[in-house]
Length: 227
Image (tube, rainbow, N blue to C red; front, side, top):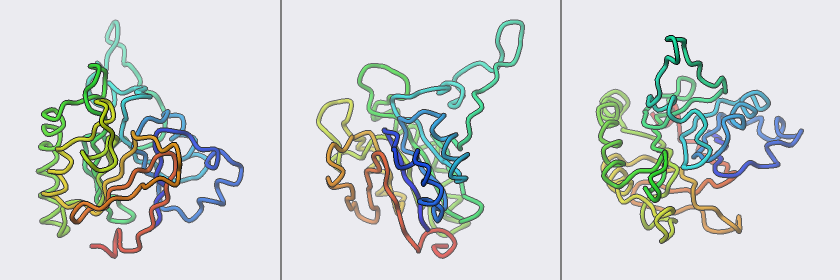
């Protein structure tokens, strides 16, 4: 399986007229957030690849609606229509991809640093994780494993994060990996000034990867062969 992973910064390679040929063998696209919804729309339209994404702590277009925090009706009870951009928002959800059988979950947002949207304390993020457990247990019973990929925006604590509060990683992600052993945790948030900087780190049974801007994940054991 080949996955185009993106986060935090748009890429001229994807906007290139050669992009459809360059990424023709990609199965789908994963975003770890902080990108405009129109970017996902562009990718699905031009590359003809499905996009799965979580929110970061910036580019929060239609965030309240997507997270179920906004009213569906406006003045005089007229429906408030959501923005019509393509892509599957996976923040706080677990899904199984039909074509591949891949088990994927999403937990977007950053550490709480200025009380903005899509920011969470450790306690709040742990609470979000607990809501995923029934579906993860179902996966284990039905498919023999809890999860293949966890998509986050922020990194786990001590695994490619920084010391300032905004870019500090979540310790609760370590707990999640301890309990549910996803094959991959894909995150963004920490920008790589030098794209040759270390992206991949190992934590027990999970490979943690910073997918800032553009990263190609190739794993022939994922999906149907992994079941």
